[in-house]
Image (cartoon, rainbow, N blue to C red):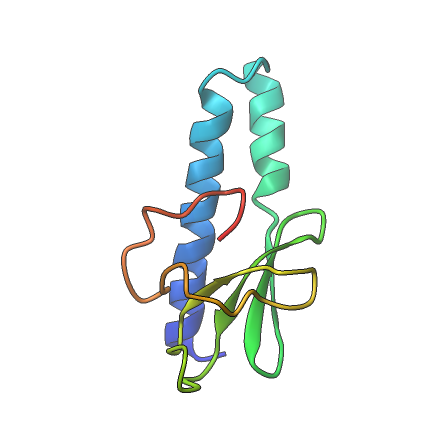
Length: 110
């Protein structure tokens, strides 16, 4: 993973975590301590590198989505793909790109 990719993937993770923080602060029946604990657990997202994609996983190991590593004709480097399963992306269309605005992303998935 290049330094640029690492920086943008960290920005992606931050955007996902910020969306989750908004979710738990709005209407979820938890105490402030419980919210802080949930946010801390959620923040433990992992990114693993595969041959064609980076896989973004939630704290429980479930796939949040995939990031395209290299241009392949259909997708550009950095394109965000929804998870079709734990191990493969949905290849119908990109849900965004890590090199552009990430404000539209949700914590529930790409």
